[in-house]
Image 1 (cartoon, rainbow, N blue to C red):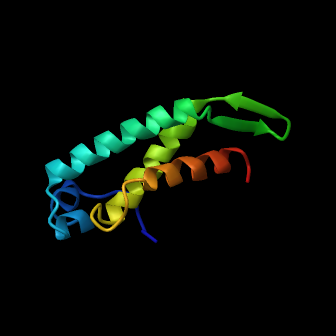
Image 2: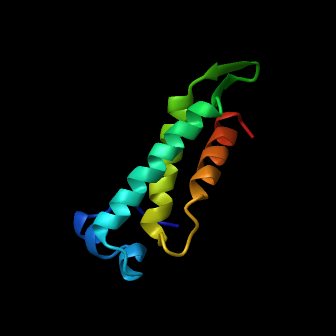
Length: 103
């Protein structure tokens, strides 16, 4: 696990696993933008909810999808885009929704 989630701009531009695998900073940024847009669209389409207490669900797709986007960016800060399927974003979304539902 990562000791800190704060990374220098130099690390993000030059030393991430994606960079080691030959993916440019610009290409990685473009892919992240595409995938986080898909996360947002899927979060809204799947009607993501937050469990406010054991008996009350609140429709908050933006909260769930924003959290999934953070997980997504953290995941790909430590792992290469080349070595993992792009559909990992679906996993981020479902795991975040489960977290908000208290599972």
